[in-house]
Every structure is written in structure tokens, then in C-alpha cells.
Amino acid sequence: MLPELDQIEQNALKALEPIQDEAGLESWRIAHLGRSAPLMLVFDQLGKLSKEERPVIGRRANEIKRALEAAFSARSEALRQLALQRTLQTERLDVTLPGRAFTIGRLHPTTSNMRSIIRVFADMGFQVYRSPEVETDEYNFGLLNMPPHHPARDMWATFYTNMPNVSLRPHTSPGQIHVMRAYAPEPIRAILPGMCYRYEQISARKETQFYQIEVLAVGENITLGDLKGTVSDLARRLFGPNMRTRFRAAYFPFTEPSAEYDFECLLCHGKGCAVCAWTGWLEIGGCGMVHPIVLQNGGYDPARFSGFAAGLGTERIMMLKHHIEDIRYFWANDMRFLDQF
Ligand code: FA5
Image 1 (cartoon, rainbow, N blue to C red):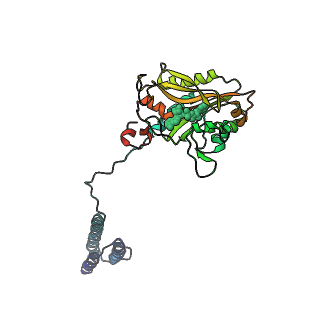
Image 2 (image 1 turned 30 degrees about the vertical axis):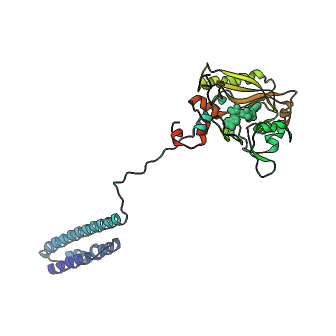
Image 3 (image 1 turned 90 degrees about the horizontal axis):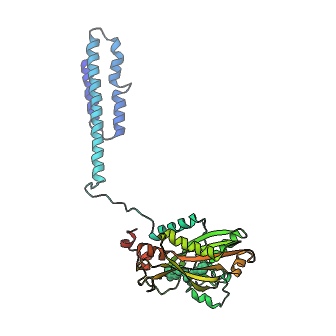
């Protein structure tokens, strides 16, 4: 029986040599080490052998089983290595190249600036209300007490569209009407931040797009004192207790009385520079007591309600804070500027 066993071993090892894949390997295992493999049949017949033959044949059969198992593992490992070599060659990766660095994004300076101003207003009890950037003529001007052909419309160098009566908003004031109509007759303490567009002569202090925050308070006993207090407090909360502000009488068709307010120019500390137009003060916004006609258009009875409104230019506030000497930096997309914030 020993020569038969040798034959079984040789056959099995010979059959293993040409195998090139996992499936072939598995069929080989079933054929030569599986339950009905010739070697296993020898084990089945051990009981029928004589006492003398049994240990000799048994030992040899076990030897062959171990040899076949070892050959199987070796072939399996060789095939794995072969597959790896093939992958390494076809999917070649140059591990000496440095990896691609991730550029970490951050908020645009106008956004973080806007958020810090909104936080100050939130502390004072104002809610944020969003209003559209594209408006009808009625909201941009008409409902703000500027009927068609009113000369005050020229105060805003507006971008008109080729749709009749539709323009980009030149200021956030049309939002006053939206928020009043949404809440009347409830009292309001809201701010309306957003982008405005004007056909401007661009300069160190003027851009064709810029952010404004509209401030609106409507209630039964709102006074000019509340307006001055809010704006002055905003300046102190942003720039510290010694920040100086001033109010100048002005004209807006939607407020009466009206004013413009300036913050002390921190770029030149009053000496005069291009940003403050050599005055020592930087105009931050316009304001006033909401005109009775505007209150009425918003759905409030002007005999009972009063209100104040202000519109502030937020880039100008950031220019003061960070000593930025030209407003054009904000939208020029120059990383040397943006990286600093
Ligand atoms: C207005 O736009 C009024 N709607 C403000 C207002 C609101 C008055 C509520 C009364 C009641 P004015 O055109 O002055 O006003 O603009 C307000 C502020 O926006 C300016 O003081 C300035 O800070 C900013 N601003 C205006 N034009 C530009 C511009 N081209 N570039 C950058 N900032 C600007």
C-alpha cells in the first residue's frame, strides 16, 4: 500500500503546480484533502488493515496529509504574492511624492464682522429679519415715501434691471416695510442685514456692492433718545467706552427728523485721511424717526405708534476696527488680504 500512497502524494503535488487562482486552489483542496479524496479513503480503510500494517500505513498517510497541507498553504501564499506584485505594477503609486495639502477654509472677513455686529444687537434684544436683495420699485422707493418721479430717488445710484419696476436694492430700508407688514400691530425690534448694490464711483470708501444692517424699532413710546442711545451704545460695545460718535442733521424721505451718524476715524485719529475724506470722522450710516407715512404703509397707526430706523455700512465699521485703508480689498479676492482674518 505504501507505493500507492507515494503515488497519491505525487499526483496531488503535480496537480498543485500549475494552479494560478483561488478557484483552482479550492478545487484542488476538495479533490486532494476533501472527504472523498484518495488519501482520505486510505484513512477510512485503516481499520481493515492488519495490526502490523496499520501503524506503518497510518504514519505515512498522516505524513502525506501534512505535506499536502503545507504545499497547499505555500501555493496559496505564492499566489497571494503574485497577485500583489501584479497590483503593484498595474496600480503604481509613487510613495515618495508629498501628499496634497488640504487648504482649510474660513469665514470671509465680512461674514465674521457681520456676525460680531449682529451679536451686539442680539445682546440689545434685536432679532434678525431677512429681506430680498431684488426689490420692486414700490418697496425700494414708493412705500418709503418716494412716489415715482420724487427727486430723492436720485440719492441712490440704483442698478435697474430690464424687467420693468425691478431693481437691485440700493439699501436695506425696503426691508422695513417687509418686517412691519409681517409683524403689525406687534412692537418690533429687528435688524435686517444684507447686501446692497449701487452704481457708484468706486473709491477707498465706496464700492458697488456692500453690506448694510437696517435697524428698526417700532412701539408705543419710541423716541429719538432711544435711537441715539442704541447707535452710541453700538459704537461703545464694538470699540470700547471711549469711542466717540456724532450725529449730523440730514434728510431722508422715510424718516423725520433724519440724521447721519459718524464714528471717530480710528485710521487717522482725527488727523484726516482718504477713508474719512479728510474730516476725521467716518460716516457709518443714516437714521431717523420712522416717517408717519412709512409707519402707515407698514400697517401701524402713526397716532399710536412711533419708531426709529437706521442703516449702517458694516464694511466701514470693519475698516475702522482693523485699520483697512481701502474698501476695495473686501471683494478683490486677494488671499494676501483675506488670509489676515
Ligand atoms: C441709506 O442707505 C439709508 N437707507 C439709511 C437710513 C436707514 C436712513 C434708515 C434712515 C433710516 P446712505 O445712502 O447714507 O443711507 O447709506 C448708509 C450707509 O451705507 C453709509 O453711511 C455707508 O456706511 C454705507 N454705504 C453707502 N454707500 C456705500 C458704498 N457705495 N460703499 C460702501 N458703503 C456704503
